[in-house]
Image (cartoon, rainbow, N blue to C red; front, side, top):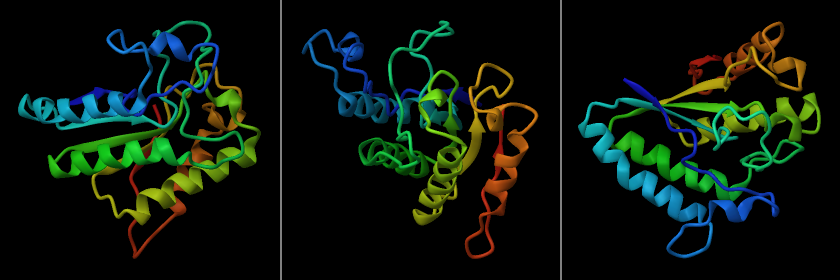
Length: 186
């Protein structure tokens, strides 16, 4: 079984919307608490036979399929750099999943956040950086999903059905010690 749990590393970088995610008991938003609660729930998920989950570097729209996403939830800078705070939270989740014998589908890009990426060169840099990051940590329980739902409103053509195969092939071209990552899109 798999479950979509894309908000495990959530934060909102938009000063106009970030306070709507404040915890009621503290009045503060707290991405570390969010990840801590995610980590605490993982053993229970596993006990109930959840073997895999999806997490996304750009989250998902926390309000569901709303037409706009004013929040800025992204482990990625506009120029292609992985944000250390997000990646540290992700590392804790991936390590715990490995300890629990769970597989993780790591989705890299999400519509509604992708327009914050400067250009196609940034997209390629992010992809290369993320794949390298997974290899550097020698994760064997991580599959790459290039982007979530490639057939809807992405701003960059390389995310759309006619070209997304280029990103899949790029992930497949990365190898370490004869190993490559499994990759797909949805």
